[in-house]
Length: 66
Length: 145
Image (tube, rainbow over all chains, first blue to last red; front, top):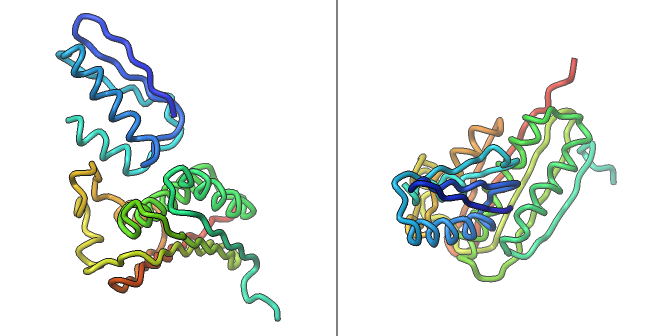
């Protein structure tokens, strides 16, 4: 699992690749928390286009961010 | 003595989150001998991931324990048993309700059993407080036309 991000005009986009499970979701949560705190964006987008597997850990991670 | 199933495998892993992907990929590889569709394999992988995660987070509460995985093939049916000897579930019926979680602080969605139930054909959960939990899931792999 990898997570990268891009910020422009208060729009923060996270691109997640490969698999999201309980093991990897903690890393996503940590990085998302850090960058949201740093950029204070108006909108946050999670791009799951390159995700090949996701279980309920991914849903839990998203619920928390909302 | 002849095994009553067409095939069987056993896997024991430590309750470490890095083993979640190993467990689901191994079960998916075993099930692949029935020539499932990509969707059927994704269903099995997701259900196994949920069950193994439950053992780690709820059964052993992130302490070290053994997770046992037994897979059998009976004609077109895959039977997967995943068990721990952790703390057990007080009320299985409540635990199976969608969005119910005892660990909301850990960002759990409470969707684990719901996903297992939806993605597999059958789900049976046996649990004894203080002794552990065994989840049995079955899925029939359709014959490819």
